[in-house]
Image (cartoon, rainbow, N blue to C red; front, side):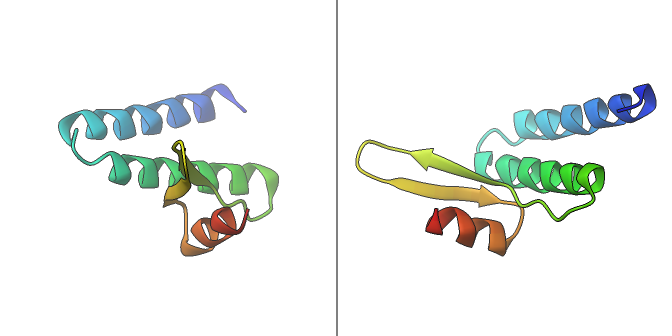
Length: 79
């Protein structure tokens, strides 16, 4: 990754985190934004479609709480 691109990535992540601070109750919204951003960035870098999801593991069960797309959430549930 080039320095300009790294700076752009850092600024986008900062915006996501800053938005989460102002919307502290919207953790799901933050995680959805993060997975969409990660998916888009990795897809662009690799040249292949990358899907991302976040799963919350609890004692008796796990649940997918955010994803870059409906497909990512479905695939994470199957996994």
